[in-house]
Image (cartoon, rainbow, N blue to C red; front, side, top):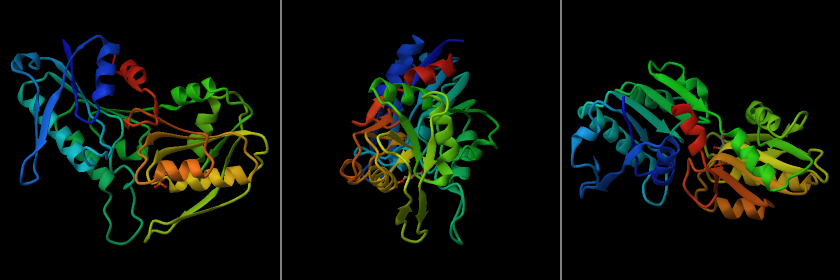
Length: 300
Ligand code: R5P
């Protein structure tokens, strides 16, 4: 079965890189917003025969950016899926490096919904055969899918990048207790017995305000503060400030999905970070590490 990759409007660089890694053809899309606010998308082809009978890999991340918000990105995704399905793709493989709404996976206040679960269910039932995401916030939301679903781990390539910067005497710091297991797995990529520690974070469920406390033994250590997502940067900035107060030497702010909303960059750098490092799940100037090879290795 031949393969073709559809480069979604939100993953133009990453989509092309994955296609090149796989040495397969690729096509892009044409998208716009109608005057009434509805989204429009077409796969940019003249001959529908290029899709028919093929394995079609759709690459579309769903993070917000200055070009479009996550709802638009999700609608574009559904439109691409529906379009290739109508054109009789033989197999539909969906790569969504950053899955929007993944943090809405549990109930914090009465009356809320678990939208992450619903969204994964909607994608799963849209006619796809395989779903690939990267470091999803709560992997358990993938458990009920009928299609083959893989959560790709970006930790090794992020660690390789940090090592290439010459970091030494590394301590991995999790910004809260919930991130400790992930940080332990991350630390293994820096060598045996690399310490992992964490600060105590609480978030006001009504206002979203966070507070963080703790003092760690970080004197003269290079500290890697690692999280899955940087959104407003509040979590990272707090953890970096406390790391510096705990004696850290260099501090690297690392996240798979560095959304860097509002004044996140400023907050993180002002708190004392030497560098902000993310993957190209989000295409911005913190995307220092490309997921292309890691994703292509799974798709091969
Ligand atoms: C929360 O559980 C996540 O893992 C991140 O810590 C959080 O999304 C970061 O958000 P912000 O950058 O707005 O503090």
